[in-house]
Image (cartoon, rainbow over all chains, first blue to last red; front, side, top):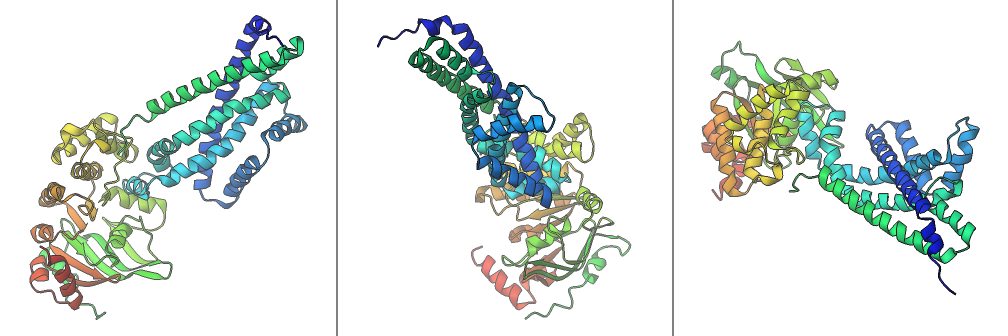
Length: 220
Length: 266
């Protein structure tokens, strides 16, 4: 068997755009996951029965079903509800909701790790509960769990490959197309593997840099 | 041994202070439970403006619980608490009104680790008192100078020693211009060599006429600044007396036992 990487080299432009598509899905998904995560924790903290129950239900459903099923569900269920979104937007939504459910669990752990004295000091100064959460608890809580959150987000980045199933525009779908046109399976997937590795490492590095910037205050 | 000393009434306070002075803090028949545990049993006492009270007693006697009820960090089961004319209830408005008048200093300092010393001090004045940043910073610098830590304003709490952190915590509370200050074992978490700098700050605050309630076992501090020492045990006020009288001639069996314990090594 002879290896021929020239077909892959010829398609470098498509691969580059595919990689950019993957990064776009990943970062948009992270932003939504972050919003879902923090919002979910805020709702849980309000300690109202029905909203808390809904959040818990959401988390459990997401964590106990396959992502592939979730993304198909969104893709086929949304149109039934009269919402038409293109595959990429659906994919971002699916990634954001999925990542968000895990983020809720992680961030909640962080919030619970913050000593009660922090909250009490804020309340004693006359701040309201929501101000205490937003201004005093949130940043140290995120700092405490940032490594877990970052590795969850790396996982999210790799999960974007599944979005090819609804033909969202990303790296794996581009690779599959090249493979279908050239029958060079090994060369294509070897290249995809390398590109994903680079994407992961770069994302990890970016998240670490973001963490250092956002949580630059000295730890006790 | 459960009988309460009859001389412990508000008379001693009204003798020392003019009758017309309304109490700054008043508790009447305050009851507090943690589940089945009866933490405060019919607490009755009042503090006049400018008075300094030292609260002491064995651990679990309810002294921390008592001062935490004053600013509603702990809700009470029944009874009445009035602070600077504001009657405390579970309503947010009542809680807000009381917390605006009362500052609190905690055993563990509880500075916000992600904010600089200055930011710690201006957060609540800007949010709660609606001061502009410039006004809040001016106030903050004034009080940071006052606790002799003005040169550390740009540092983060983790960069300060325990004693410095507690002085910042005192300044942070003062920035809200409270009418009374509550201290919950402010020196208990400190290394011995840092206790003095915090006590000195508290003494100077007392000299300036601040109304203070301090939960502390620092008996030197009690002798130096307290107008009254209140001794608690099992959720009750057992004895209430002038510091000299309390230390030289404790009236109650439990006070004697307690003083024996804590003074044994002094």
